[in-house]
Length: 491
Image (cartoon, rainbow, N blue to C red; front, side, top):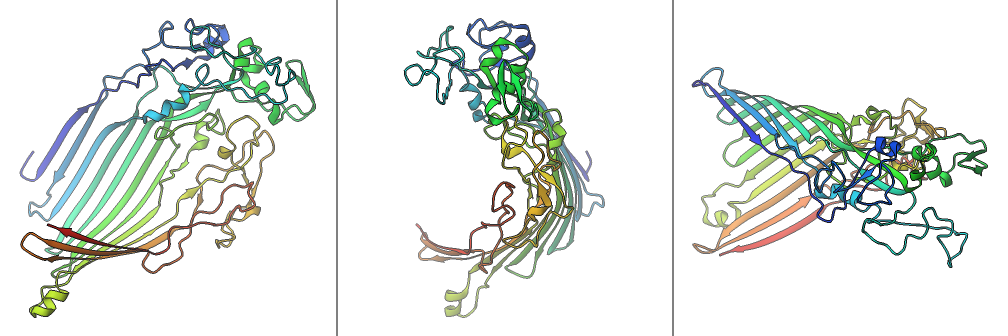
């Protein structure tokens, strides 16, 4: 733009075509079709609401529309405000798209009829006729044609045709200043916003119907809500739709989760004489949002605790470390004039990394299904009954068990996600290395490294399962001192 202002601008075109499933083991579920009794023409025994490749309007072999117009603009500016080349001010923005890994759809493709599973406990017909009282009858022989049978209360992980691609907006502003020939300092603001993160939401959880005696679908229960009648209490089952008997846990991909991060980074690079370099940086940052399963393998029943309140899952990111300080130093011995001393002592390089960081944020779990809705007990959270959740922060009492209580059956605890700070940590690692020249083209390199040099005790995170007798205790930690040695001959 000028002799003191540089601008880089561009756009990346990254169209997205969803992963196709060649054996057609993919599907979608729509509640409106379920309520109207609309069935698949591909699998005639499939419960209403399920659609497969070959059904009217089903997109290809993936169940998702392609997104060919994913354009990603980016802009960068660098300005020398004085024209002396010792100060720079930089700013940048970029939009990127992130895609889930291929394994994301694995648990979706093993649903009935391809992954039917039946568990019969004490069937009325015994082992001679275990399917005597089983809804839909005997599932054998298993077939995968249009007459394929469906087992009762199968699990389905589905998605919408127009599930949006995850977007990541990144921006930064930094100021660098060279104080003298040996010292450079900088201050940077770094931010990002992630939108359309993929998570899962339950469409067919079990409802809490109280603990008094009741009758569900003509069957009497001495306690209306128990773990044994979860499938009978599911939303679809209570609707009276006859096809509900084939639908157990039904979860759908929700693309509405967001995360954002903002951080300040201060850094200094210094050279103290010949052979000594010291770099230091400090980062103060905060990442908050709703966790995504887009980078892993989502399972049924790992959805939001409150299916009507996605924002109840908003909390500190699992990667959030509020404070991080790093100090690195490299020192090299000089070339001594004395031949013997030069042979023995010159050319050794000592490297040091000292790192101090605050702890990660932890989620306290009930360890048991207090909602009795069939979802993962690991995602449910208790009530916090004391303002201070910590004990004396020792190994045996990092968290105070009396600060938490299991919520009443059928209720959601009052605790948020990732709001308990775990122990911080520090580490000191060092390396010593030198290269010896044996001949013109032959070199011998020796290296010794030590991690956690002082062999200090560093604490892991405490047990966060409130149902465990080790709750609040720290029973693990990072490695003690590790030393390794290397010898390399280069010719």
